[in-house]
Length: 255
Ligand SMILES: Nc1nc2c(ncn2[C@@H]2O[C@H](COP(=O)(O)OP(=O)(O)OP(=O)(O)O)[C@@H](O)[C@H]2O)c(=O)[nH]1
Ligand SMILES: [Mg+2]
Image (cartoon, rainbow, N blue to C red):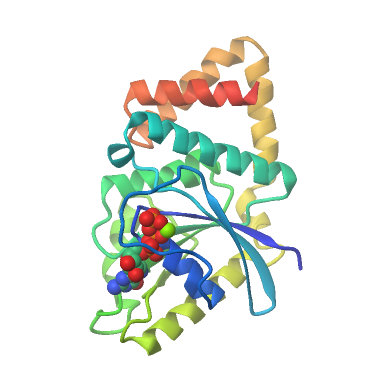
């Protein structure tokens, strides 16, 4: 079985590094109490479990308010380049969206849309991992039963979900249970043949190339940029100024 590529995203402090360690079964990634991200680039972690090999790309939380506009643009552009690069060489098999149990805020919703809709063109299945559930009174999954309607209403459609704790602390049993839940989901959704159902025909790279062609056919150029700006403002919550700057950068990268 070939190595599967997984892109991990979520807000700073959501538990992304802890989640990598949970999956890996060892300390592969540095966790922190410090909410400042020191790098705007992704980090990659090769991990293995249950006979499978994976490469997890840990991205920077793409939240404009925290980052400031220039860094935000850099971070989104970096994520865009990572995705393009991966798709041209092989494929992106899974998106892991890590969130800390709490309200589904507009920022989270925008972040999901940015990755799932805008960057991955809805062609990669997304698994939602909800952390910080060690103190849930009943089963950890009860959190989802209470909240799943909200996700549906807000059009955050995920292929699967895992309600977990990403730290061992005093909850060794729940930590082990979390490991099994996440590993099983990852295996299920990266299994060969799984992704085809999601892709609806062509892969991401093909759709990138199609967009590029449209872009090169002169008149398509401004139309495409306009379309991109509209999607970024309407679906990903960006101001038109930020969306325009991002569209310009992406256009430059493609030509
Ligand atoms: N109680 C509890 N703490 C957690 C859980 N997951 C992570 N933490 C803690 O939350 C803090 C942040 O976790 P990280 O795994 O570093 O979060 P991150 O998303 O990688 O953060 P950045 O890399 O800064 O974006 C650390 O102190 C973790 O120990 C969880 O499920 N429950
Ligand atoms: Mg981290």
